[in-house]
Amino acid sequence: MPNLPAKERVRRIAVIKLILGARAELSALGESRDLHLVLMAIRLGNYQGRPLDETALAVATSLPRTTVIRHIKALEELGRIKVVNTGRRALPILIGTDRPLTKGFYKRLEQLVVQASANLSKLDSSQVDSQRKEMLTDRQPSHRRDRG
Image (cartoon, rainbow, N blue to C red):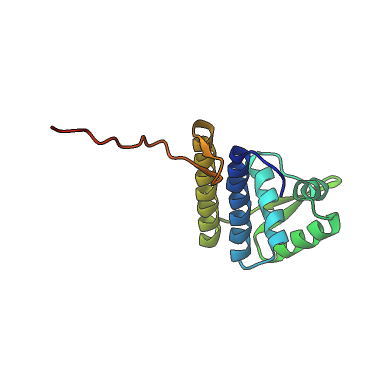
């Protein structure tokens, strides 16, 4: 194991938990993880007002272009997107509304991100027990007062 300072180790734990949690949420959707990656990249382009073509989707998802094309066809058959041809470019556009499963997915992802952000923020202002490799709480130790 690399010799990391305790604070960096705790920081990486928070990030790894976020990544593993996001992966678990993707798997829980029940369809191909890659299909959902393509759909999320399509959503990103649509939400930003700049739909992505097949090549840009392949770059955004780090998937082969042929895989992206296959998933676009599957999403079109499922009625989740339509493909609009604009000259030489084919742009997948979202249609319909989010399914309840999709809304829950994004809510759970948001919770994972909020939790990871909170942990990282605490880490920036906390000390780390270098022996136990964990954050120390901000609570001050209680002192007993002598009454007498």
